[in-house]
Image (cartoon, rainbow, N blue to C red):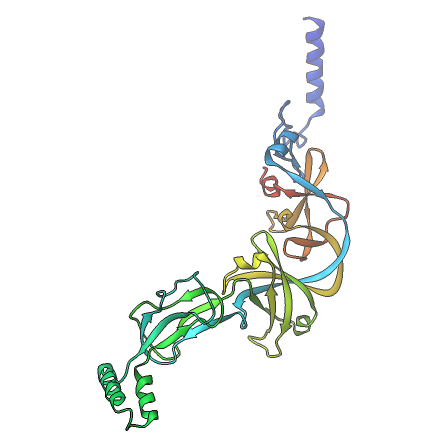
Length: 336
């Protein structure tokens, strides 16, 4: 036996002598040269630089600051009563198209434009008799009272359905020849640049302390102007009204539910981070991923409050100066 073989045997026997029951490696180390993303036993993730570039991972350095306390409200888009309205029939009758035909949803109309006519139903099917009576009265116009002639003309006159404001048709409920009742809604007209959002606040005191607000439309923030809070409770809550401002408001539709973040005059200390950085761990806790080394990332359980719709305020679990993953956090969270 050569000297090298003898030394190797001694080393092997020594290693076996030191190992005993209960001290076997439960999790073998990664094989040499394994340069791939992997979840480590402590829950952190090893992510090589090539994988970071492939995932387009981005981080941002956080900073602690004092911010306004915010509330998350569920809102609904409504029409501005001064820039929208309904077209309703005053009399019962049959719908006939206007000069340009019946308008459809999305069509632009001018204020005062005739949208349709409603031909009244006089005495059931006796409209022809009413027309004949009107013709006879016109022949005797010199001997019959003017009031009687005007009543006969009104009985057969078509009611004009006109647009109450300039805007677009948001809803159309009739077709040609349809019979409608009095006070039935035929069309709704809104100005898409002047919409309002109504929300319910369940703490009355907070309804009067709102300083500013934002609505989240997709991934963008829509600034809102606080109009005021009602003085009558509805469903055990206080209705508050906001006015949508900016070009982004034209993407809203009447009746659309939106999430509102309203900021109050109260102040709170925390670390603002983008909402896209928030993930959920297996225990359904909110976490953010912290970059602890060039190729190492660790999850951090945090508590948070709403901030402005696109960002949230971390009130515990995160300190200023740490680097938080803001892009590709969902991919990082899936590494196993």
